[in-house]
Amino acid sequence: MRTAEDRFDPLAAEYPLQLITPHPKNRVHSELYEVEWLREVEPHCAWINPVDAAPRGIEDGDEIFVFNDRGKVAIQAWVTQRIIPGVVSIFEGAWYTPDKDGIDRGACANTLTNDAYSGGGAAVLNTSLVEVEKV
Image (cartoon, rainbow, N blue to C red; front, side, top):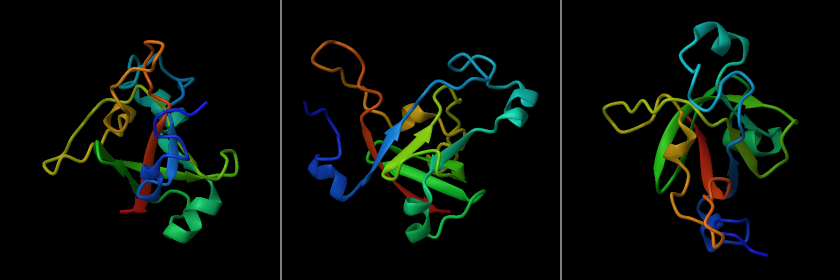
């Protein structure tokens, strides 16, 4: 069964990466986000596979933009084989912190996700297409 913004969506020509927004282990949604030592233990970063990072000139630790028609976030890249090619992961629960240009420097995943509902009435937060570029 197809879902909105899946890999077969025509929008994938412009935004070829699937964004997932799992729960982090160091906070409860946005609670505890401002606890510095928790962020030190596990920094807020975007997981990206080397297959997707290399052609974009992205290396581990680089600041990147993750974006689509809904918004743009700035976040540190974690280049890892722990995520499959074609997928980017940003943990949910970060605080929205837009700069003067509207770029979310807090890298809140909600900046990029669709506010629509699925046919069953649930949120469609895990079906967002994005593109990534090095800052």
